[in-house]
Amino acid sequence: MQQSTSPILSILDDILNNESCYQLAKQHKFIQRDSSKIRGHEFVKALVLPTQGSLEDSLNDICARMRQFNPDADISASALAQRINKTSAARFMKHIFEKVLQTAREKFEKQNPSLEGPLKTFNNIFIQDSTVFEINKKLSQYFPGTKRGGKKGGNTCKSQVKIDLIQNFATGKIEEVQIYEGKRPDQSLSDKIIGKLNKGDLVLRDLGYFKIEVFKTIMAIGAFFISRFPSHVKVYLNQNDPNPVNLGEHLNKYYKYQSIIDLQVWIGDERLKIRLIIYRIPKDIVRERLRKTNKSAKEMGRTTSKQKLALLEFSIFISNIPQDVITAEMIGTIYRLRWEVELIFKTWKSQLKLDILEGICLHRIQCLLWSRLSLVIIIAHITAGFFNCATAMCKGEISPTKLIHYLLKHGFLSQAIVNQTLEELELQMLRDMPRRLMKDKRNRTTMRQRVSEFEAYYGWCYAA
Image 1 (cartoon, rainbow, N blue to C red):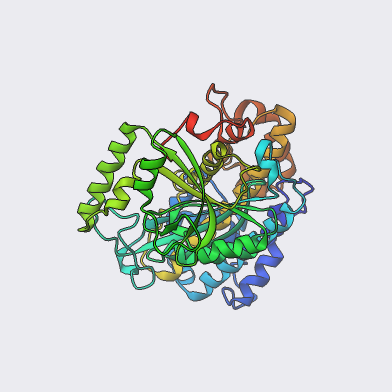
Image 2: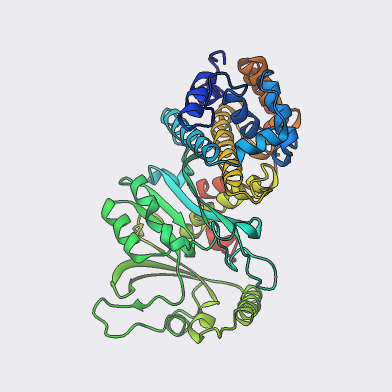
């Protein structure tokens, strides 16, 4: 591939370089003979590069795309099946994924965080979350599933894949993305973020990752966190109290008329000193929560505790951010930034078809997973690069949905690779940005704007 000087799309030169792909393919024995028609790079490009509908293609379609990148790679679907269904192919694509992630990390180092308002308090904001999707049940021995993320009615999914993501909200940089079996609990992945943190960073995560030992480590680093608080964890009003407090009764007795409560407490058997931030929510939302809780408990054959029922009246968070740094009113708003990851997962599934993995061969499924995740990281890198351009040129935000659609619609990215016109594509994207790639202007503010403008959580949403 001809070396490109385009600052954003140049990542593709490093990742999809013909020679480096060939060497990796030989290293992992995906290619065993120098005379092989396949050189490695066309296989990677056919699986990774986005084109309209390509993510649901048959092996025949993949063969056709391989010929676009390398006319000599004229092989049949059955010949491709013999290659893609082997361990060597899965190892090869995993190495490509690791190269994509490493290259994106290195190129992101030059980008500056874009935090405003109260978010300027933090050096980085890390969001960790996971998504789960079902695959063919014949793969259950490799990817066992659970009821979590399963079908309606509580039916167990025999086989599921879990993708765990750590993203830096400040830059859009994907710090880590890994594949696990569906039954792997989020809590077991809670400490994966520790190696990413430095003093002054902030971590946002949901209940699944709640682990007091990890919170203690985050505090020891000098970093901060905001987390939802589970009802079963013990709360002590004083460090040496012999018994935990009944939190629901305590709040309704002493803070009956307060919509926001900010307490210093000690939690768990470890007696970790922490800040407890509580928002009282409207009655109609309490009723809806109660309905969902009773339904879930019935499906699981359980009885909901009185403590949990009492706490349905509140949205409760814990944090170690000092009160004089971030007020209780803003804690909930900042936490809502975590929903940015939910939008990312939605994009992965709706546009990049991450959850559509056809086949019953483990190695083929692994090839598809690593290639889709490589695409995810490439798209994130391109989006972040154009985010900075959009901010400077258009005074607005780039739309990841529109950008992906732009690249998928006519196979622009694949065509640019084939024709060696990455620079021309990037210039065209910059010209098209104001009209085709920006988020629509709305009266409703974005999450980033809400936080930057100090919009209090309780003033706009109680349902977190």
